Length: 173
Image 1 (cartoon, rainbow, N blue to C red):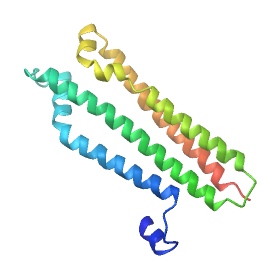
Image 2 (cartoon, rainbow, N blue to C red):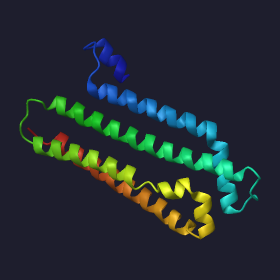
Image 3 (tube, helix red, strand yellow):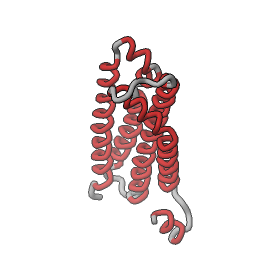
Image 4 (cartoon, rainbow, N blue to C red):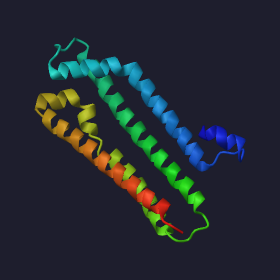
């Protein structure tokens, strides 16, 4: 509906529209990856929880599963960044003639971009790429803990950047 209204109204797409289109494409790519490799992810989960014994191809299957998890995390984080930037650009365009509150917009932009780099930086790459070796070393608990930290940091910072960007957009003129 958004694209249709833009093409019927101003007959052009703005930067915020292109960011949303890119986010949709990343989301679609994540879904395609997930669907094509979900069987590997479920096999790894079943072996880790003890539902089934590892098959002879388990090492290969788990390697694929963990690497897909990394790609999905990166695509998802990048997609969320693009959606947030799209909203920030859209609201900046709406308030382009209002000088009051511009510092909050810039703070929101800085916080949003910084949060993205934190999200990408705290992905437990070592746990996801060396999962079998780490499990053999007894580091599975540490990896589980890092995944919980990743989830908490992502959720808290996502809400914080949403609240900050909202405050910069709804400030009265």
